[in-house]
Amino acid sequence: MERNVAATLVFKTTASTKVAMAIAVANNPGYDSVTERLSITAAGNEVPYAELNDHHGGRFHYLEFDEPTEVTVDYWATVHGIGQPDTSDPMELIRYVRPSRYAESDRLLPTSYAEFGGLHGAELLQAVRDWVNGELRYVSGSSRGTDGAVETLLHRKGVCRDFAHLAIALLRSKDVPARLAAVYAPGLSPMDFHAVAEAHIDGAWHVIDPTGLAPRGSMLRITAGRDSSDTAFLSTVGGSLSLKTLKVSASVNGMLPEENPRELVSLR
Image (cartoon, rainbow, N blue to C red):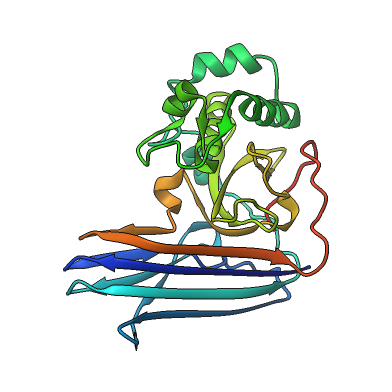
């Protein structure tokens, strides 16, 4: 499989701002080849950056700006082949079953047991995916950056990260390790960075997309973590910025894979 992805960002920083970006395809030793380019410029000049390794092959690019600066970021990558499924260690399975900032599984435990009481494994995964898909409406711009799974359930609408947070919280409530993955998603409409849930059952990580907006078989991992606080594509660690432009593209060379929501799929 050949997958082509790209992202363009334009943002304006204040003075003394430090920026972390997660827009590059995650490292995976299973790919046949990865060709990519990252250009970061300000006033026509290249901006120096550091690449920092994160969990699950993720890569953050770190920038520092002493003065207010308008920055343009262009990234593209072509990935050939299918990656290796992500592995896990005991500490990760503990981390991803705990409540977190946007996936308040402790508060949703009664809901999870009421809806999915006797379900386990793949049957539970499918039931949670279908329930979230049926209970929420996808409405662009309908949620705030501070909304977690509980707020999403109360409002009954959200965007991809809200769907993923609710699914993650419900799964963790049933003692299933679950996490959020930021991905490039060929076939997604409207095109953007996409967020999905991953759950660990039967010794492996499997991806579910409660929005049903793109086939999982061609998604490319960017990064993964407890929730969107770990996976934001653009954040500051000091200072502030305003995003002026965001353009994302993702495609496959040939036909998109057919999506069967009941099939177990790993991000590869």
